[in-house]
Length: 80
Image (cartoon, rainbow, N blue to C red):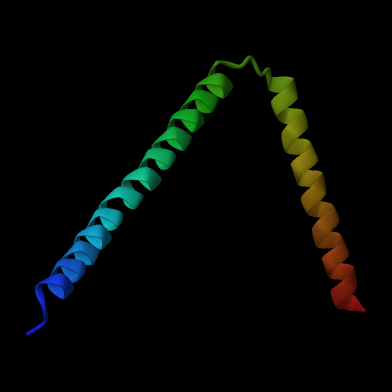
């Protein structure tokens, strides 16, 4: 058997590790919750934002055109 000092050191290290395993995930969870709150606020902003049908159509048209350009370029590369 080890001495009382060695036992006290081992117990202190075990307790410290257990405390670290409890505290660090709580800190990470707190950061995740703050990010969640920020994302909710951003979604509320976008939900309340006035976007008309013309702007939405313009956005979809541009996305569609980008896909056509990408697939056209990929098809040209594959043909060569």
